Image 1 (cartoon, one colour):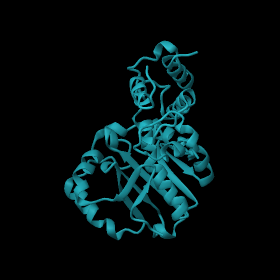
Image 2: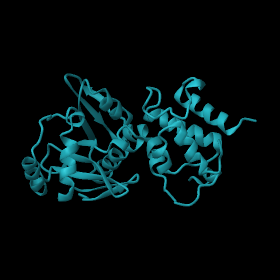
Image 3: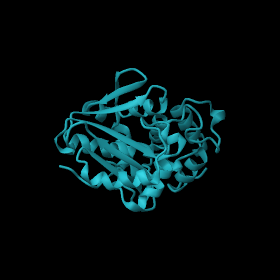
Image 4: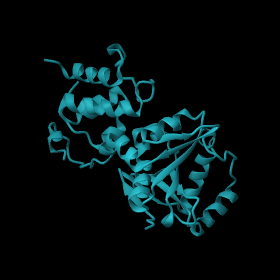
Amino acid sequence: MSTNTEKLEAAFVTALDIDASAVTDDLAYNSIEQWDSTAHMILIAELEDQFDVMLDTDDIIDMSSVGKAKEILGKYELSF
Amino acid sequence: MIKHELSAYGLVLRPIEEKDLVQLLAWRNREDIRSMMKSQDIISMSDHLAWFEGLANKPHVQHFAVCYKGTLIGAANIMTESDSLSLCQHVEPGLYIGDEKYRGNILAFAPSLVLNDYCFDTLNVSSLTATVHHNNSQAISYNEKLGYRIAKRGDWLTMTLNIEDYLEATKMVRRFLSRSNTNKKPQKNDKKDEA
């Protein structure tokens, strides 16, 4: 069974089509070509599927990095 | 029917007020913003005030302050070549986000969604037009994500949008930006409650 960190990494890899090694806490929205607004929406859908949650609009807007994604998902009783 | 305040997707688009003018002028004159506009001249405060004072007498254009959580984050407008927005078929929207935090953010789509819904659903226009410099790949990409298609090429591209393309292209972003923020402690499995 995958850990939450592995699920998060898998969501970023799938949504942004990047290598797993690129998924670090510092990776930020719009900092790489692959993480544009379209990919961001795919990412949100992936995260919601992986963790079976529905994010609020504010969370979707605020999800500006991998580290921030962990912080936001933490509000949904998920730990990383 | 002309509406003076629009509210949706977490944003309020309200009439521009005098208290907004200093911030709007500072944003409008910033190089990165005005370089994307058709008129790229630096505007003086006196010209800006004159423009503001004339807004009420222009039935072919509406200007809005874009506010998120009560804070001004940008400006938007719609205009038509016809005499009045209430009688027109074609509208050209304009938008800039001045607040750095939201430039390039998914929230930057929200003002366009609010304006486009208003144009198609309330003003009943048949198409929207955008005029974009051919070098402005960011704006071209942004418009394409809203469903715009290039209708005419040149130094300045003409892009057009009909309601079918708009609704299809923005299905996902409208869904994400339409969710309510409940302020309750989020729970796993909340997803099951989505309509």
